[in-house]
Length: 147
Picture (cartoon, rainbow, N blue to C red):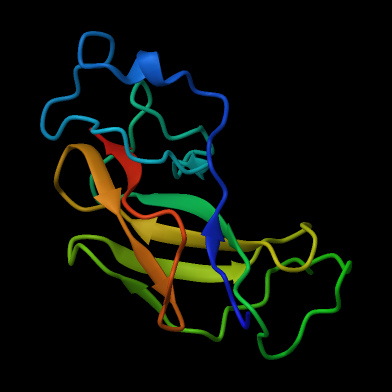
């Protein structure tokens, strides 16, 4: 397979902590979507209890994007600053999210990409689906929390 984009997921947050009774964000309610490993612009984890500010940038991580130019050697460490991704990224289900940047995650092993998305003005548990170079990211409707 030429590419199989995938998002790094949060495997630590207990799903019962996202119930409306425990995390009553105004706006859209969490509907069981996958939760990406995501960081708010201040470096803290994006979570229902720590949502991003509208208009701020949230960073998440992708892998499996296939061959890029320049090609990165398997097992090498990404340079700092990261090399910009030369493949188009599309936000499939919302015109409210915009791609702020996409680079090889600095200091990470080659093949890990850092994607920064600008948050919309909406609030709550927002779902975002992505495609890289026309190939959908395996995890659809990723939940990102905005206050």
